[in-house]
Image 1 (tube, one colour):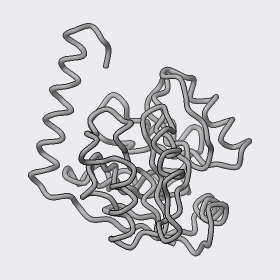
Image 2 (spheres, rainbow, N blue to C red; image 1 turned 135 degrees about the horizontal axis):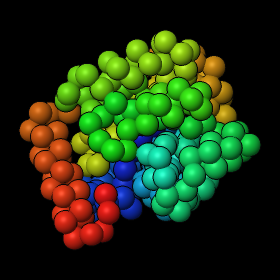
Image 3 (cartoon, rainbow, N blue to C red; image 1 turned 180 degrees about the horizontal axis):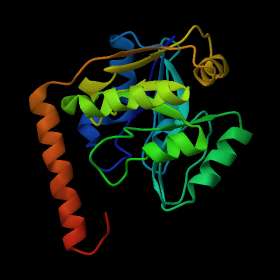
Image 4 (cartoon, one colour; image 1 turned 90 degrees about the vertical axis):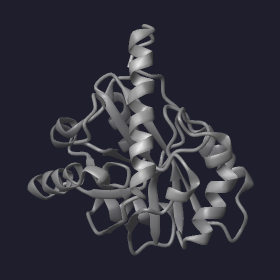
Length: 225
């Protein structure tokens, strides 16, 4: 089972509807041979719910996920149908996900950003996103994430972090699983294969610049980071 565990839809900021709506994500995922997708929008599962509603029988499995903006950085909650308030305590995210049978991963843990959470992965024994296609332009973040997971024996995931349809499937977590529960169980046990490809350089550079400009604008205008 090949699953892209980190995809943003048009319900996330910086993901325009004409480039990353749930229907387009499903169509692309089917075309590139994915067996499952996690639409992990920021602090909401509305993208997941829409994809689940419109999914056809021959589309990949849609697994609930959310990239949570906790008070200490971003976490990727997988397997739990839950939206979150921005600024939530990361311990609350971890506790609820574990109670509900889901998993929590540290996405892009070494990316050059205030949202990196490498220390959370170690201290809370989270899964580690060891391949993030958008972070792969710098090479170092994914190598450091793999080293962290190996050093502490932590589970591993891979995802595209797609904010546009053409990136869907560039990061894949591969497990011997037939459904959502089996997949999460295999990830938790560390029995996965990681596959990934870099996005085209031009796209990655433009996205990084746009993200930086957007962050600077929010800081200057007093709307936070």
